[in-house]
Amino acid sequence: MKKILAMLSLLLFLILTSCVKLENYLIISEYIAGDNSNQAIEIYNSSDKDVDLNNYSIGIYSVKDSKGFPSVNVKLKGIIEAKKTFVVVNSNADDSFLEKADLKTNELSFGGKEGISLMKNNEDLDVIGNLGVRNYNSDLAFVRKTWRLTPSNTFNNTIDYLYYNPLTAINYLGEFINSVTLDELLEGPKFVDDYLDMDFYEITSSYVGTGGAIEVTLEGNIDGDTSYFYFPSKASVDKYMNSLTYNSKRGEYCGKVRYQEVDTPETQVQNNKVEEFGWPAKLNTAKLQNEADHIYVQSNAKEAMVENYGRMLGYVFVEKDGDSLMVNFDTIKKGYSTATLTYNGYVCYKDCPYYNYFVAARDYAIENNLGIYGEKDPYWDYINNKSKQL
Image (cartoon, rainbow, N blue to C red; front, top):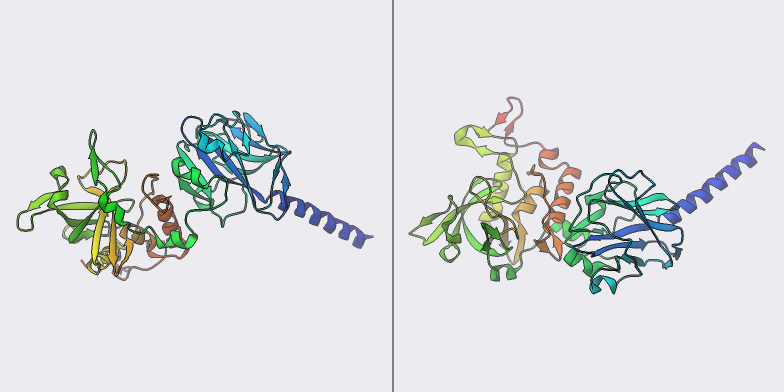
């Protein structure tokens, strides 16, 4: 009798597990919180079977909504085919959204502060944002990484999703694809010659970057995240920075550039301020630049070009034998940076904002215990807790 009960229990467990697995094949594969009414949610069916959506809904959670009780519950209907997507769009959205919609409804309205949930029978299966609290996802799009198919009722933003500008995310709506692969993320952004044809900055109330680039010549490195470069006189940036000085012999301006999204340990020997991993970071940057055939500085689009200390902010690329590498990215990937990463949807490579590459580089360094995340600094005296170079 005990054997029969045990077998029945095992059979029931397998049946329930099978059902759960089937339900869990549905995920939110894209989220767009664009301007006006340009909102969309895409659902992907990763299974080999069609799924009836009649018991499914999209829950829109406002601040302080209880879990399982969203303020708005958009009922889904129809069939989502195997390995296909199902797109729900605000019925007042632009035509570029509506033409990709499987379901149009004015109930799908959110501005980025709400949490979004794919639900079945009022159970949260997969979510975007945090439910019941204020989110900050306005003017933002999330596109699911094609290699991350497990749903979760906890939002794993940088683990499961790529960040996109809503203006470009529309290109991926209706088909479960990414503009980059995992390998491409780990290779980092490449330099595009078109950047050289763009303006380097524009003047509004201050100097704002445009994403354009200038070829420069290395004067010297201060540490792993700050360098002096010579800029051609035609790109003198109107001498608006205090740190930009004119070299009459070269006919060029020399300026200090702080690497965007990077913060490496200090190597100020003269001030007796050298920190652990300061030398490895500085030597890595110097080696890349000294061996390069070309060095380029790219401005950050739609953001101020100068930080509080008067240094230009930029992305620095080196090019050698026709191949390019962003020094900012390489520094993060080797575990030399402690900077908190910030999102900008206007500087992209292959439609993918640089932020995604930096996140992949940081996570790679952490997972592989590189640099500050687990290695020993060969230039550091761990017994006396000081640099060997002082």
